[in-house]
Image (cartoon, rainbow, N blue to C red; front, side, top):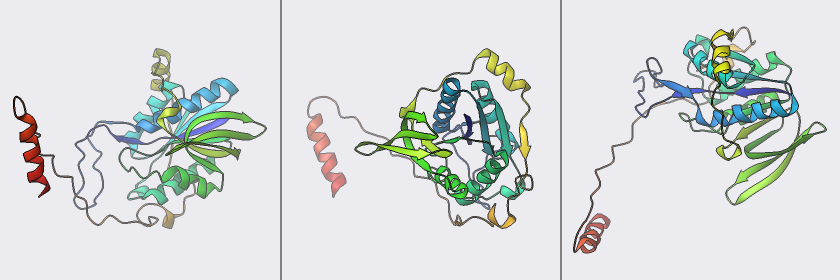
Length: 258
């Protein structure tokens, strides 16, 4: 069972800064981490490898600093790590990003399953996983909360819904996006940390994955950011205490509702 886990490095802070000209996240000098949903994707990939054999390859697209996220993935148990990094990818939206990742996966060639987190902490779109499946023309199951079975070249999984779950079956190779209900991510072992330090990270540029120039970066993006604003700070709350607190609260709420 050869598994690819697509991960993303996201800012590990609520104090996100935006480039006022480019209208993109400023990542330099910002503490980063693996996208939380992707940690569940890594864990599920590792569990399948332990059960069925094979290998797990961590894949990400980003600036050179994203290498640290890949090393963390290796410390958790991933066997290989690949970074696609090129100035040509700058400005990619979810369409261009999923296309670039699909090109890298085509270069890898030998895979049975692709795991992605449900969505990223910064973009919050849930587009990239399904986009990769679309570019590769393979089946997908999104919002997976449990893998029930894998046999005879097919996977059966529970897809979380608003009112419960659906049981779906798909032919391999396929792509699954996972939710946090699926497992509890492990912590890196000392042996894993040592391996991560010495593991060579494979770096591919746009030309290495044969990505078409007009389908990556800003050129290949179907969306454009016109304006970025931050949410206003919440006003400080008020606590009512003592006798008459309920009356004061009611009067305050009436005043707010006018």
